[in-house]
Image 1: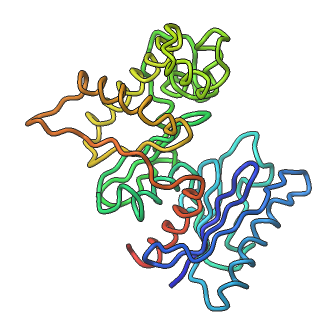
Image 2 (image 1 turned 90 degrees about the horizontal axis):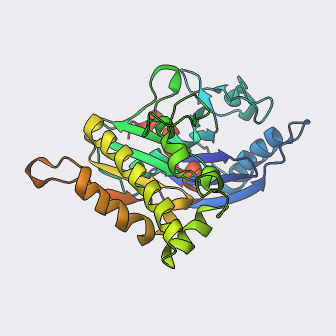
Length: 297
């Protein structure tokens, strides 16, 4: 069987055609065009038709990765404020004419890594996405855990500093998202840096204030990950997103902080892995999600 995975992003719709082994048979990109005429819906359908024309044989289903919270049956996005008007409660299976499962975009990145990436073969995994904001997902006993209202995995909104007056978009004080997300760099650095890339480059040059700001952020990440380890005891934690491109500037101090804070009974540590998939993770994960619902693996 083959499956289509589509990632509905704010600027680009990404698509893949994959088989049960995870081999990518074809991939494709189309601009989103978020406009009042809902052209992005037509572009999602054109993406599906593109793969159907290419394959010329039955396709078992479509997985769609999108921002927001899906409904209980993963048929549509049930909650998404202020983005992509018309997405909420839109039934994609009816529109696309194939069995379709809709999944949150961060959950989709987790499914890609669990099915075909660095977490393959593990039953319990936490994924944390580090980018403009911070997101994530939980994989428990070999299944994606979505939780009540499908809102599980909003790891960016755990609190790492309860005394901080800065609240996240869901009202959490001192959130992990604020501590390390790219959106808050300018405020955290008092206007000296406008992006994580600028901050990390200054840290690499040994600039004292950049070093302080960056290592404070990495410490907050380590404390947050340590809390997740103590709560879920996962087989591994996967870090994804643009901030992970800092490579050793991130992973080396992160390890040093975890060496201090992580509880390691018997000397056992929790592996921290860098995600294998890049910008196609959402599409690949969406395909793996519909695949799992159809085949059980």
